[in-house]
Length: 259
Length: 217
Ligand SMILES: Nc1ncnc2c1ncn2[C@@H]1O[C@H](COP(=O)(O)OP(=O)(O)OP(=O)(O)O)[C@@H](O)[C@H]1O
Ligand SMILES: [Mg+2]
Image (cartoon, rainbow over all chains, first blue to last red; front, top):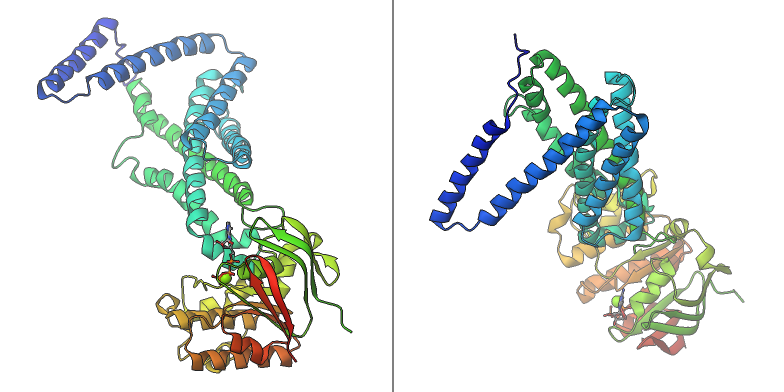
């Protein structure tokens, strides 16, 4: 049976760290000065996962709708701020507002649809399902929105002449920006689409791998992966679409002039 | 006496332009001349509502331009920029881009070809617009403006990339077109002779101010 899981013990993991020490040794010898980063990354990964693991254990053992809601909100809020930080102050206030609305709305509506309609999580706040799936959908939507908004900002700068000419000829801002919106949308969902194209051939998706490793039969793991992938695509597409649909307007003023 | 189509009242735009009073009459040809950097293009952009005055009021048909819907206004008061921009695609794409942008049906190919012919542009509709010379692009940009049903045409140095002979033909065509179809024409030109030949009124702009206003026949 596939159901037997080898639970890793602390001494076993220690062997894993020894491997990293060997690598550190090699780096030192070759005078590749990346020891600091390697140590920091190993330490942070360990620390963060231990904390999250403990938290998740508590949360999953004591399921409560408010706690699930709180965690989902923190994840979404964190995603929004991560996008803000990525742009290092280049976002206008108006565009920040757009992101702060479109990312949660897009990601959460897709999330809810997949949790409740597709997977049918019971009870609806079951943290064992809600939290990991939220992570995947929100994380990918965050990347999508950043990519989309980034492309849109660049296009608005680079295509100034085209935009101005379109406006001179009586185009509504929406018509004048149509190309930009479409191109930005493409750029945003391309990674997700490529990911889907390569899935199962070039690589095995992380969630599915994890499930199989933990003893879930591959057919079930695949069904979940497909469901989650559709949810990710939905979340990325919807949140990006909203951020562009509302975002292009921030490049024009009330008199339909370019800012 | 006709009342002016456009009327500037104590208008300023940033520190670039400051005009206490300026009138543009309907169905006339108004020329704007003056030194480079004086603020001529800025005036046309204000008229097209691509920009709005930072001070004062511009009246159009006796209405404050600030209260007029910008998009509707730009469809009636069309602006040909000093540096014509060609969109990706063919000459035809560029000729009908205004129609697509406004969501209206473009004219037939024969109409487009006839206009190219009139502007002495020996190109086919399916030619790539990216490879047009400066003067050719300028004429395509002019043509796509004339095809649209505007009331006012704002032309920013429409002949700057043309030789004297081509420029003569272009001005002849534009003025002919606008008088025949009852259009109002506002042109910027560096050639005083052109202004003297066609304009009803000539404004000279100097460092953001009107330094001279001439009625010309
Ligand atoms: N958006 C802007 N921001 C800052 N300065 C500007 C802006 N637009 C124009 N200017 C400046 O305003 C002045 C007037 O510009 P404008 O284009 O109206 O001149 P012009 O009379 O059309 O000149 P030319 O004959 O060379 O075309 C110039 O000094 C220009 O650099
Ligand atoms: Mg100019």
